[in-house]
Length: 88
Image 1 (cartoon, rainbow, N blue to C red):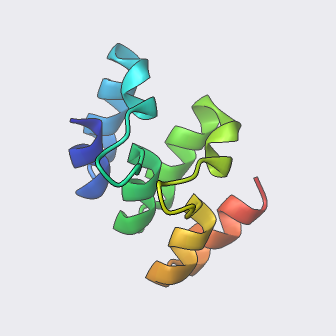
Image 2 (cartoon, rainbow, N blue to C red):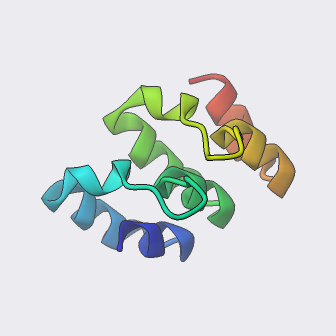
């Protein structure tokens, strides 16, 4: 469910879910994407910051194909998200 909140850019719902169910942030979908990848795709820098603030190591996650959140941001054209991820 955190995947859905992040993919849709719902910051307040993601915050509530993260507080109540912190392990949801580590779950992966069938492509190996964590909620961080979907937050990147949504373009919400605030969602990305929320997820990274809880565990900065998340910026080094890799999907099944080896894609990192930074590479995903670059592919999606999310310049500000990419800059944040590269400087975290």
